[in-house]
Length: 98
Image (cartoon, rainbow, N blue to C red; front, side, top):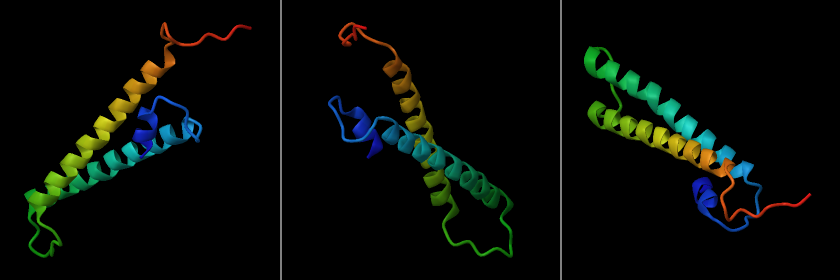
C-alpha cells in the first residue's frame, strides 16, 4: 500500500514521510525476519536432528524464506533509488522565488 501511494504523482492526503517510513519498516522487517528464518531452516535441513518434530516441509520453507528475503531486498533497493531520484530537481520542477 505504501509503495502504491509513493508511485502516485498527484497530491495525497498523507505527508510523504508516512508512506516512506511504512515501506522502509516493511522492507526491513521482511528482509530481517526471512534472513534469520532462512538461516535456521537451512541449518535444520543440513543437521537433520533426529529428536526434532518439524512443523513444515523444509524445502518449501527455504524457498519461501529465500523469496521473501529477495522481495525485502528488492523493495529496499527500489526505495533507495526513489529517494535518490526524489532529491534532485528536474527541469520541470517548479521553482520558488524568495
